[in-house]
Length: 111
Length: 112
Image (cartoon, rainbow over all chains, first blue to last red; front, side, top):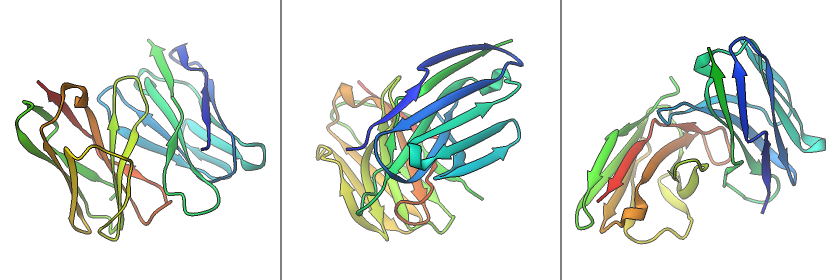
């Protein structure tokens, strides 16, 4: 099946710093989502981005499907950005309905 | 409104108990999902319903029994669970299969 790799696995920042999280996938994908899981366990949708670039406030994401990667940018980080960031993909082709998750990036933003 | 609700938030049950988890969405979505998540791991898919019919069962033990009574509601019936079944159980929904998924807040289950 498709492999989804996220880097870095852990990231510690000071408040106000910028960061880039990466998601590589091993095969073509139909759709890609970025999630933020807060310390209470809630998975929050950040982006639904099978290709192209999207922005939402301090966050933006770019997916280059032909090169099989996606990037999540966080600018001017805040302590509330702390948590785990997951990339998840629907593999392309056929009737595959399983959203495959990467292992996540644990982000800690210190005041 | 992109809200998926789950009840209860927390559940402690013994190995001989029977309990149910409930998930509800009012977004008109026709695909609903159950996931299990252990600490420091990504969510693992358990079941997928499409138009109230079970589409995917990821070889989940029979002590977990899903039910989709209508297009807005998804239940997970639990019976004779083991301590290793303790986890966060997440429900999600999407417009149809393979579309953007929206997750509920989860039920944190402890089996004693």
